[in-house]
Image 1: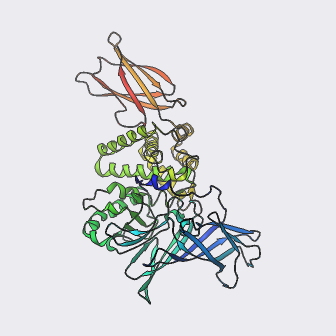
Image 2 (image 1 turned 90 degrees about the vertical axis):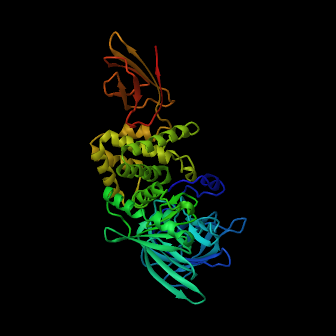
Image 3 (image 1 turned 90 degrees about the horizontal axis):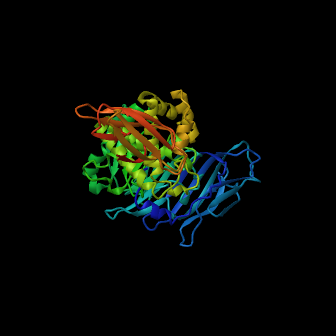
Length: 535
């Protein structure tokens, strides 16, 4: 996901789910939805298949109640999927739908129930007009907004397979995750579209897009993965050109990470409030992403790499969001490094470093953050700063080992959820290094190194005297610091200093006074610093 400047304002007006987590294990959702052009009401039937041991007295799902403005969902009945006469008692309060199973007759621990409901979505399913004035329906579930229109376990750690059966006016096309099972014309100018995803995914990336689209099938990657573009007809020529770059980007990440996990990649012009949203196999991009000049290459790379990190290998909870957004940020830089070279790569890193320095002037939170509300976690910490942590890890262990760490972590946690400690264990196993201090200081400290570096040249001893002082409030960081210097016609000399204390002084032999000193010449360290020559 790429953040949007409207995001923070929007999220302050919405309510967040309780941090309490129900332990119901949902195996599969079948979402049946009816949409219309007369109003914004939806009618839904959700079939849930889940595991509930016989001693389970009730289960709890997330579903938004009707609010004071009349928006929200109302459940009309719940019954057994195999016996419609078997009614399930329920309560629906405080955005929690609780199903009472006390008297429910069951033959095993796997149950399948139907939930019938209706209402006007307050969020999650965005029913509006696109920039051309045409009516559209786009789901936008991140981070926990699926429950505004779907009864579900709205959290990243409960993954389930799912399918959408959408009945809508027949002038619309419907895109979703998974593969197209059926598209049938019905009476009264309606159409049924059925998409099914067999891979278990979190609710944040279960989506539908319903609009008038122009569709272009770009071709297959690896002879088996169809890549397509879904754009508004009014800008289809520019859209088809812009979105076609997805094919080469997808191929790059398959080669860098491993096999693509889904059966298609649809790239969709949408009404997402984000710059882009990494919905598995059906990425939604903001509606102004079509310009005709392929200006959104970075956005496309970011969202496509999310198909592996964030979608398939997901964070256990949003405190560890960096495992999604930091990975997407840094692996986008690696794509640029491979395609455009080292200079472009370092330019992107410097831009990110400057963003981090500016951000930390008013924020004092670590990257792994269990305090900040989840809807405010779309911040510099989880993107640019977290990407820098991966860059420093790469410099610490070396390119080849880092690449293996990325591949091994994905292979270990695809289809699963991970904590930061899980990634650390993989990194330690592959590198053979203890990384406790590295992870502790870069991910759990609210600071980065703030360095005051003073130097002077002693002509008599032919030495540079250099003092490095760490000014940040937190404890001293441990890191290698590279200093480049040159004298006269001599080429640059690189001196690596191992920093571990709040203040340290080093002497560096130099035959003549340096014309200049450059701190971190190859852009390897996340820091804020001032270099001063003293007399």
